Image (spheres, rainbow, N blue to C red):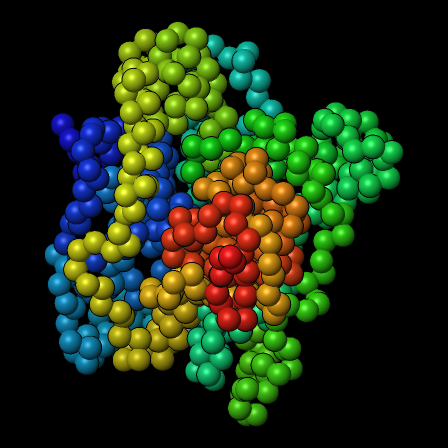
Length: 567
């Protein structure tokens, strides 16, 4: 069977990563009626691994409706489906026809909202969330309570000696890691409003005042401590390396430079070693698997993380002057709330998603090691191509077999190279925000503004995108498809050219002179990191990794939002 489309949220057939590995050109067909958008925020355009697909789709289907309800958004559900392994999402509005097509005319839809019980409840919830600043509660709960519990659970699973487990115990451990990831990823979606809403309220208000998203986002510099956490954590090791008579040649030599350096390295590896390194998927090495990358990151650590207060963007006072005098108090309040919410974004992604998912990879690698010894896999890493219900059979000598697992990996490579389209199905109909009752309109407009700022502009001139920073930079281009490739090839002060970045790239930013990404907008991870490290960047440059030659001299001009390959 050639099952290339799977609606995981409704159990619509076998997992595409497990069964859709046949040959032929990739086919991208809408998985159902309505409008479906490709999720590029977490994976770029790479298909999701077979093992992660069910957990990912279930987390979205469970968590997003709870977010919608808590913040009074006029959305009923987030429906996920995999087409050639790529995640496509359809957002269904309250009252939207199940079979797609156009919703009722705007005046009718919102006249009926006074009678629709769900929309009445959402209106009250939106008003309560705005009045009570619900996002602050979620930020505070994360840092004061939930974060410590998640870290503790992560560390406990990470300390299990996998080699000492028999097959049955290993399967049980993998299931425990998968269940833990399932819960933390649901919680990540549920509490995403803690950053989406206050940032979106600020961006939407700035738009009303004629301030573009890139300029507005520049004033958030210094509000994301998680982006600089690695630099600050490694400061004692960086100081010891700087004072050493010769550069260390191994991680153990760094530890030997003194107790402070040893503690910093050990804490760093415990907190970050098993986090996903390349994207939010399971198919690339972590720091724990690559001691050479650990050493390069240690040698690149500066030990003097920027404070986020200097240079690289518009003067806050000049931006504030663009706001009508009567609205400046509102501007100040919205900016303060956006900075409060931004604290949450990268931190809970790293701790609630990247780390638990990395622990799933850790257990799957042990499965793959045993399969390799028994002839069931060409490469231990191919275990991530197993569907969850295939693991036990594979360890027992059955399952898809090593050639099928290798073919699944090759298929995902081919699908990524083919370039999945951003949209399938009917044309998307934007929610009629202007016609909504006040609190619903405010909340929906905020979330739309926040999501839009994370994504690249739909139409961009050649080698152009959104600039971050106030100075141009010239250097050698290091073109890479992943953080692992980048760490292998990156030289200090290079221009890093990649599809997108995630928190796994944080160790690279002290090394680079400038950054160019194919995906992302002014609130993407790359843009946030560039601001925090005061690194010039242009994000959302379509086809950058194919159009910029590796090793070429390039100029990155964030003011013009352009990348130029120099002769």
